Length: 224
Image: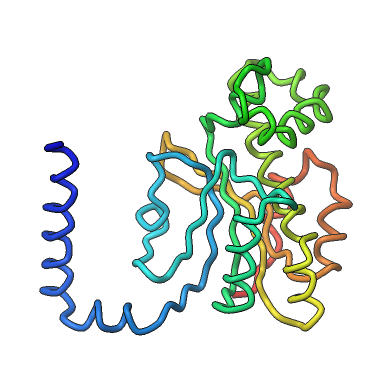
């Protein structure tokens, strides 16, 4: 109970410090929500999105689920995406995986995780599809890290195919879609795939060899 009550004490101190630094901060934030980014990440308490990106509350709309999935039948995630695109008009959507992802780790092993086995079916299919590439890596950790990267790229393409994004792009609207991975060992975000903003850029990216995603795609120029 003491730990729970400590949250309220921390909240009070934070609110007081924000008012002391910027007296109009809460008035501005309460008036309207205008984030530039939708950030779709995994469930991991070690990754505070605002801290690692240096953004303030209100600049990033955050959505999390296990293994940062964009399932075409997940109405929770789709509702967030639709709200971000149609109402908030976010400029960018970033899908971020992270090394050491518990969901990807589970997908690397045998089933036996209950409902999560259903949730992770796309990741398991990726593991099978890229079995040869993964087997060529030197150890289990490097194989798991590579599957984290492959999963991010897969989710980026699934997001690009959603009717929400396709409608927006057909009207010449943003968002621009990106994929990245967070490394908790050094605190850095690493780009994997960037600059998907229409059907042409998606098609171009899909023609690249899968093993080239990390080394080639993110070097292309991405508009602001």
